[in-house]
Image 1 (cartoon, one colour):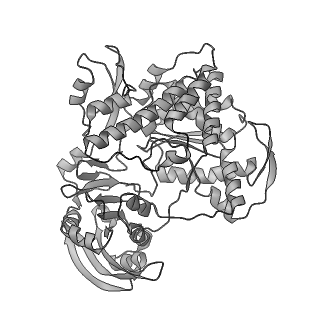
Image 2: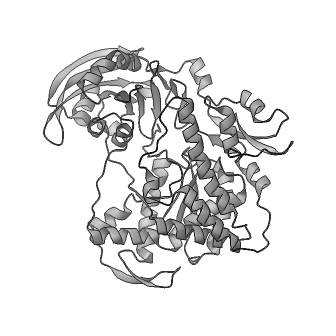
Image 3: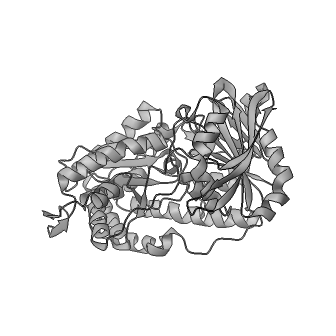
Length: 509
């Protein structure tokens, strides 16, 4: 949870196009089409978005991205990434654009582009890159999406097909994904705004074209295009680790439909990028591994101070001054604008969400303005010394049906108000989980000295590889789950191999 509302989808680098206003303006405003020349193919194409419109829409969406994700507060790292990006962009077919490269303060493993030259990489994906050339491969791929006008092409196809935009709250999407049916309805009541970002995946051919363009930009900038292979291997290793972690925890390994269903799989993508890279036989410079490790030394790993941190069943938010503890067997989900404590079955949970000041100055005003209930009763109470108001009642959902509500408003540290709502798949699930839901709600508290000590975020550090290997390094690591495997994962050897003695490797402290 951040002080500012933002969306941080926790997906492996799926190469998304964020369209906060892009599609909305292109589709809903009914833009006229024009003919432009594609800078990559040289062919003319009909579009709802010429270059000036690309730039204008990208600028607007850029502000939304910064608000949603947050900029990683390290100017040295930002300058380092910008320098790599500018050198690559200078070798592209659209070097005339005012390119912008930003490291986002997100643990997700992702990178994406907006039309007009706005490129983003998360610190999450940077933790798993092994060299400057690897990062250049990620950035070059994203530059390829912009130079080939993939965002404009998608907006044009959407308008031609007459597809509109359906906005859903971030909280609803998070809870539905966790298996808490009906949560989206409660989220609509609890959220003061709909999701700021619309996420649309690129098509298979666009992804492969971006791979080809990325390899070309690497070659032109004296990076070995074979580093594109390393990037795809990172994605494959992420998939393997996720499956291994699921088995270790006794969970079912996901094999169902996901974002890869409409994209080239990482196996297929690896084969094709290997073929592309093999065509380049030039002599290339240093891959910049030493520079890269120096640049990311000290970079936050996982959740940040501003997002709050999860440690086992506990959640600590040092800037906002509060903590929560999930019941035994429950899990904490730290999302962009809410904290959710979810039971093992995934059918009930407690949602905790900061209330904006404009929602009301009193608990009664917040209940009236945010929940808009039809009827109900209010009970004034306290939670660990904080003033709280319990509301139980009903409201009408968007279909006009009566919907039960069980929500508590509490004024926490620094007079910040929070909504805490019970959500469940159905009435039976709610009843079975009621005792644990009450326990979760009652855990809301001001940070103690012990809580503050536990709230310290983790960071990437570089150390010399030791004789005891990753097993020894894992014993010194705070990572709670499969630490040895995770250390291998962030060092690019999850699929096999071992660093040389004395070689610098990444650890988490």
